[in-house]
Image (cartoon, rainbow, N blue to C red; front, top):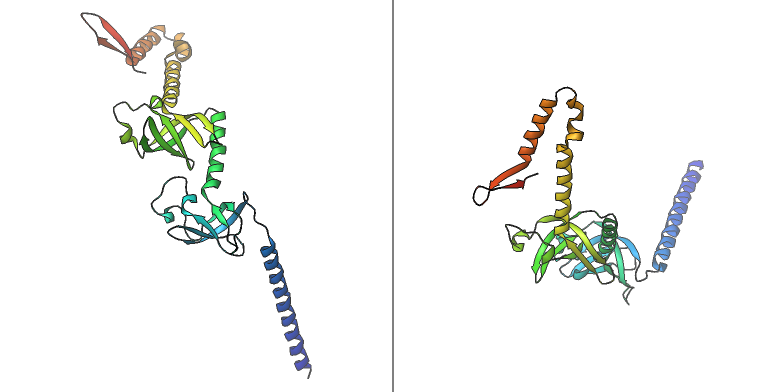
Length: 255
């Protein structure tokens, strides 16, 4: 008899635990269903299916959210599963609130765009050089992809000596940021300024290397003739003498 009572007590305990779990599940489900999703919010979700016209995402709402194809990436893509895959956990921007079926319309590219603009503004503020990938040649310049955004490089800001803009498609090249306008989705860049800055840095480095005051002061007291000889050799390596018309020569700096 005591064993029967013990077994009955254990069964009641298990039943109580199951009831508590059920009540907790129902409470969490109710909270989820009551949660409000508003346009402009950023929500976390997991990709559950990649379709031809968009992506289905579980964000914890009444039904799966939907990301239209044009809202997956700011850069044209052939296949959506090249950008997202089932199981990816990402952040999404709510474009439209729940419809009559409880489905949210989401955007992936707008989250990337927002982050991209923040990074670009920081680079511009600090006058930093960035890498941008040339994706297309258009009238008056080229289009580049950077941080999920599209930028424009005017032809006057390109330096394509020895090649054509078409041959640069797919290449990542250094750029300086000329203008950013988030409201107008406008990004203007310059390869010319990036190259100028790089060459200026190289010249400064070369001059520091060949400056006799800095480079040879320590050796001067030991052997002035040796120092002068080293300076002459270094400067000869840094310049080329090219024959011009007649017997005149032109000096061409190489470093």
